[in-house]
Image 1 (tube, rainbow, N blue to C red):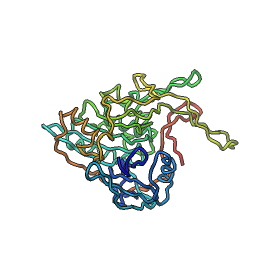
Image 2 (image 1 turned 90 degrees about the vertical axis):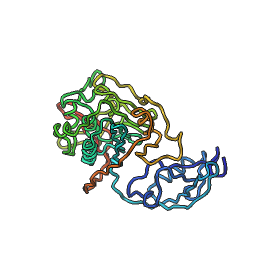
Image 3 (image 1 turned 135 degrees about the vertical axis):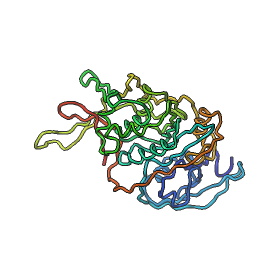
Image 4 (image 1 turned 45 degrees about the horizontal axis):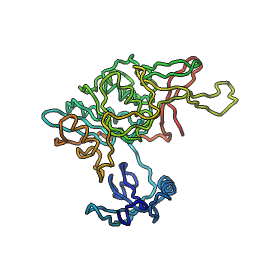
Length: 362
C-alpha cells in the first residue's frame, strides 16, 4: 500500500487497447495502470463519476503509474486521449503455438460483428494452413452481436450439418418452441461470407475439442457459442463465469398499410437452449477451469503464452506453456464501415411465422 494504490486510492488497468484507438495512439498498451482521470484520484467514492468521464467520448487525461520494483508505485507521464474514429475489427490476433509436433491455433475475437465475417474466415484459413489440431478461442471481452456470425463460428469449429439444430427458442404456451437450424441462422446474415455452407465446411480445422476463454464480460452471442457447441464437441471453458444472457425477444412493428403506429416493441419472450435442450444460464455459464486473469499482474499481451488464461489452456494441452509460437496477421481488407451497431439476435414476427432476425440498433 502507498499513495497510489490502497483501500482508498484505486488504480485503473487497461485490459484491451484497440488498434488505432485513442489509447494506442497515445502509446498505451494492455497492462498499463493509471491513477488519475482528468487529475482526479480514483477512489471508491468517485468510481461512478470517473467511469462516466471515461465513457463520455470527450478528451480525457490519464495519469499513468509504474510498478517497477514490485512494491512502490511511481507516477509517470500524463497522456491525453482525444476522441477518434477507428475501425475496430473483431479479430484482433491469430497465433499458433507448437510443441512436440502438436499445433494449437489461437484467435482473439472481440465481438460478433458480421460486417467483418471475412476476417474470421481468413483467420481460420491461416490456422488450417498451419495444420493446427487444437484451438483456443478467446471471448473474454466479447459482449455478443450477430447470431448469424455466432452460428458461422460454431459451424467452423464443429462437424455439424446445415440442417442440424443450432439452437432452440422456448417461449410460453402462446409462442411455443422454435428450433433454428444452422442454415436458418446463417441465411439471415447480411454478409455473404459463409452463407454457402460448403464454404464453411472447407475451412474447418481438424480438432476434436475447443478451449474458450471467458470473463464476466463474455455475454449474449458469445455465451450462445459456448452453450450451442456443447452437443457437438467438448468445450473446455477457462476463466470466469460468463455474464448470463440467455434470452431473446420478439421484434414487433405495425405492418398495416398505411402504418398507424411508428413505435417498435421488443418484448423478451424466449429462453435459449442448445440442440440438447440445455440452457438456463441466466446466472452465467460456469467455467471448467476457474481462473481470474487479474491474479497475475501486470497483464500480458493478448495471445502471449504467459497470459494467465492462455497459459491454463496450454498446460491442459501440453503440460506446460513452454512452446514455440508464431503470430499470424490476417489480411486487412478495406471496407466501408456501416453506421449501425449490431447487437444480439432477436425474433421478428413475419406475419406467417416467427424467424430469428438480426436486430440492428442505430
